[in-house]
Length: 476
Ligand code: ADP
Ligand code: MG
Ligand code: ZN
Image 1: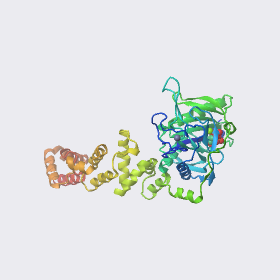
Image 2: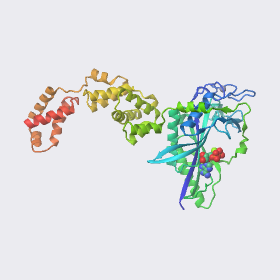
Image 3: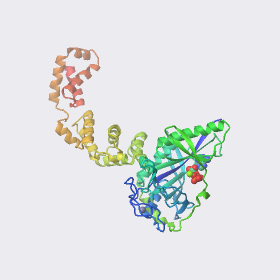
Image 4: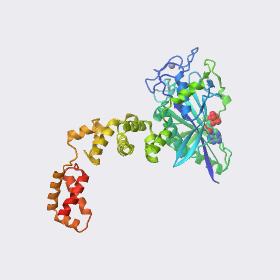
C-alpha cells in the first residue's frame, strides 16, 4: 500500500514588544534568572493583568501578513494547566474567539506553488523555564513568564518534511519582515509543534495523529517528520494502530517516545478570563495596521523579477532574509544597477558573511561601499579581480574601497604607452610564442596578455592589454 503523510503545524512565535503581555516588565531574552519579573508575571494572588496594546497590534500585523481575517471582537481565556514554570496554574490564552483566523501562506516547494491554510492565530503568554543543571535540584527562571506569544495553527495541508521546512522558512521570513519577532530559534522565539498522521494515498479520511512538541530547529522538524511517518507506517503495516498521543522527539537518537495521552479541550477547562476586558478592533484600526505593513517577501520577490529584471533564483535568495533584502534596496539607492549589485551581493557579500560567521542583521559594510566598488570598475580604475579583493578588505576593515585603492596604489594601469613598451619587449624576448601565434595558435595571445598582467601585478586594464597585444603581434 502507498501512504501519504499529513501534517499540521502549531508554531509559537515570541513577539518583540518592549514589555511583557500583562505587565510592564522588560521583554528581553536572557538576563540573570528572575530579574525581569514582578508580582503580575509571577502570578501572585490578587494582582491584575492589563493587556499590552502593542501585543494586539503585533498579533494583528502577523495575521494581516498571512492573509487572515482579524476579529473586531475577541477575548482572552484561562487554560487550566499546572506546570512549575507557570505559577498561576493557568495560562492566559485565547480559546473560541482568536484574534485572527482563516488565512493562508503560499509556499514554493521545488518550483511548485502550494497554499497552506492557516486556521487561526491567537495571543497567549509564555511560561518560564526550568533549569535542570543550575543546582542540585531543578531551578525555575520566571524571566520568560508573560512574554507575549502568538500561536499560529495550520490546517492539515502539509504533505512532507520538505513542505514543512519550506513553510516554516516562509513563515519566519514573513514574521521578520513585519517586525513582530526576531524569530531566533536558538533563543526559542520560534518553536514548533508537529502534528502528523499517515493514510492510504488518495484517501480523504484523516488518520490518527500524534504530536511532537517544541522542536526548535527546522532540521529537527524535518527529521522528526521523516522518523514519525516511518514509525506510523511500519506500525500499521504490522497490523497495529496509531494512538493519539504526545511524543517527544530525541534528535540525537532520531527516534520519538510516547509522553502522554490525548488532552481534550475540556481537560483544560477554558473559561473567559474575568480580569481582562474583551478586545475590540474597529475596521478603521485594522485598516490602519494593514496599511502600515512593509512590502512582504513574496511581493518584493515579484518586484525584483518584474521590475528589476532579476532571475527567479536571485530574487529568491535576496528576499529570503529581510536584512539582505533591505541591504540590497539600500545599495540601489546609491547605485541603481540591480544586476551588478545583485552579482556583488550574491557572489561576494554572502560568501564573506558565511566565512566570517556574521548574521545578515550585522552586515559590517555600508551599502555606499558596494556602490563605491562598482563605480571603481565602471570608471576603469580597477579591474574586477582587484575590485573583489578591495571589496573584501573593505568588508573586513570598514575602509572605503576607493580609499583602499588610493592608499595601496591599486589603480588600474591604462597608460597605453607604458603597456605598449612592455608588450614590445615581451614580443622581442619570446620568438617561440610569436611563431605559435603567427602559425594560428590563438592560445598564444593569452601568453602575451598574461605576461603584461604579471609585470603590472594584475593592475593593467585587460581590455587595453588585449588590444595592444593584437596590434603589436600583427606588426611583429
Ligand atoms: P489541538 O489543539 O488539540 O492540538 P487541533 O484540532 O487544534 O488540536 O489541531 C492541532 C493541529 O493538528 C492543527 O495544525 C491541525 O491541522 C493538525 N491536525 C489535526 N488533525 C490532524 C491529523 N489527523 N493529521 C495531521 N494533523 C492534524
Ligand atoms: Mg496541539
Ligand atoms: Zn512582570
